[in-house]
Length: 256
Image (cartoon, rainbow, N blue to C red; front, side):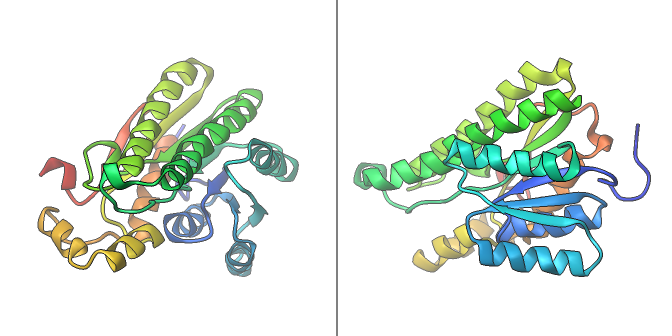
């Protein structure tokens, strides 16, 4: 059934990495589309400010401080959502870090560990808790935030590329496993997007943004809201027959 009004009218959606960038944009986009949103991230000051801003506009927003690398934190965030709303209809697993842009043979163990722990273990923790809640509630939709780095190589970013390929793998595995139980699992794969990761990478690598623009057919960096809009559609009932998809939102980068 296609809902009337906003794409996400009446839905309860949990958003990770919601304190900045694509996650913060998703909180605003999803709320505007009618969802009650629960924001999860580590930085409480930012979460509190964004939640207050959304509630001040008449939306339904709440937050829970969450370290995704800790399974108990993720379960607490899901339990908070269930206690507040009685169900979990959707989840946008957006949180992730980029690490250093360093040749693979020079990459330090601590960079590998932090990227894999956040981007892979964090997603693993989220999927387990979210799917359990959705099974109890009769189904739902999940969108995982990968990257074009989950589809093609990015030079001097091997742990990040490996982690985002893992996001694609988890997406396809979960979609296949839970489709008959009413849970859809998809992924967005952003290209160059204005976020803390890209601002950091571009700041430490002069000329990198311009080089990426050269090989991106649209020739620009995306706004975070453009990624959030794609995720909103995948979470909505209008994508009811879509599961296991990895959707590039990249200005044509991987098609080039």
